[in-house]
Image (cartoon, rainbow, N blue to C red; front, side, top):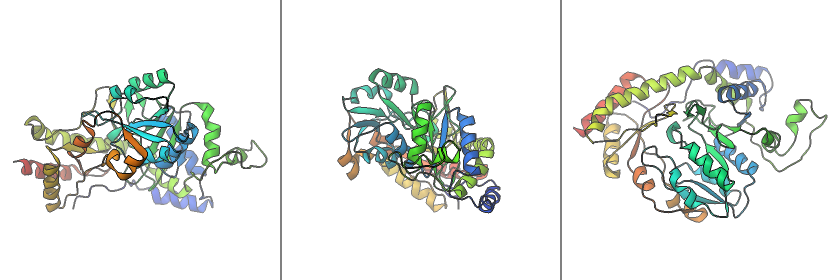
Length: 375
């Protein structure tokens, strides 16, 4: 059987988890948390990287730091995971959904400005499949309207936009280390902070509203409750698992890109004959092979292809159900303008198996079944 996803494992995870256990420091912000944070800061160039219990929680932290209040509006695509909206809805804000581009499936930057009202406080671009949104235009719009930009870079570690790592362009960037991501700690995430002015409060919010981080650095002789916060600090055991993969990040990235390129090469004839569409990556973007998808003619064809792959023990899946059509989306959000592509493209998209260690022979088999289906 060819599984859709196998969580990354490079071989040192158990050793590092044992080291964390032996250190008798497993609650977080120990040696491995520091190593992960330092690696992320050096790799991305961000001012501060704070590991969190999930990308959802990183986004919640960004909403707090951005000062999102009840009645505010936050602009985002509807084609995204629920966490993108949840983080702001929990603060009492309304999600304002904007249509996506049919090529990258990212938010259509040309439609953002017309969605802005006097209640708008932030724009949340989602870098789908690790391919960047059009960040220059988004940042320009944000500057003109005095809005925060919070990048949902859940899928974007190791990807860049015009040479800049995703998650470091906006005010805040949120990265996922869920087991389905390129680098994993099971459940986990990271908040990237661009401007140093936000670091101290971010540490406080992450540590349940206390100045505990300053205490552990020896900057104060005791810590206390100084602000509203929550428990966003991941276990040291999770960080130990993650650090083994960060050490091999380039190797993992290269392996995924090799499989991605093999898919693209094998399926090009079907694209050229008009049977399917393949992923589009703008020339100024470097992607991380987070996923490989194809777009079929319609939902019926996709359903039949999923069944054909399943008959050969190959697991392939569709992706997001647009948020604006869901019960919560209708309750907590609204769609700005016309849904020209969001629903249409979501019903055509099919994700193929993609993980570190996927063999080229398995990629070839998947492609062979797809080609047979269309023949």
